[in-house]
Length: 325
Image (cartoon, rainbow, N blue to C red; front, side, top):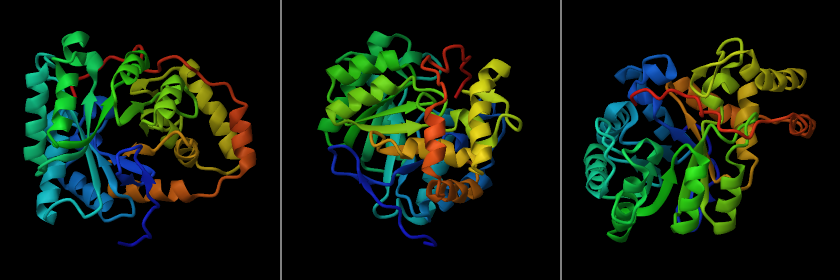
């Protein structure tokens, strides 16, 4: 351990204590169609070890990432290390059948059992229902006899300490948060420097005491790499209109000599409704960079200027063409 431990915060009402930064491992599953580059086993292994040796204690994956490769690579490292480090919180997600879209109770159970085996766990700290909008039918995924009901049965059996909902479309998630007693919710790409689509979701979660994980604070990379180096937005090539809000933030950041990535990360970290910000990393250097950005002093005047900028509230992934994950 080369750095002091990052302070821990309560994960809602679960009794779990987590770092305000959670490292996401979707890219470690080698998903070039989504991220635009490949990640080797060697690089993925080094990245996972950097996370587990660092000052945070929260790591996230999913059964479907990289057709299972994310969990497989993470699981291989855990076996080499003799298991998850003491005090670490591991979350994963039950998923639909990627070939058929089936997401019934039996598929949810198969997804769980595969994840337990691959990751070498007897139970999970936090288990999400994932990407319901891509299921064969929404009703199948969210009924009491379907995947959602099975998620809560899994919790009752003690195979998950806490359960959550992780999806894209906010309008699908809000009614479910109202009707079910979730411990956590994860949103992605929808609460950033330039978009507040998830604002009503955060408000509802706060009112119900549900822990919020805010993923993809960099809007799939452009708010870390910049609009010139990476002219994409929400996993798609971006035109000048889509990049204009990002360029306005870049201009403010340049005046204050604030790295754009630090601003994007701290925007999420500053919001008291966000329990942990999920940052995807695919190389060890990004782990250190994330931690450096998190503790970089940023003047209040910068935040005041950013607060005066316009932002979008529509779904940034509304036109996204989803590739196989």
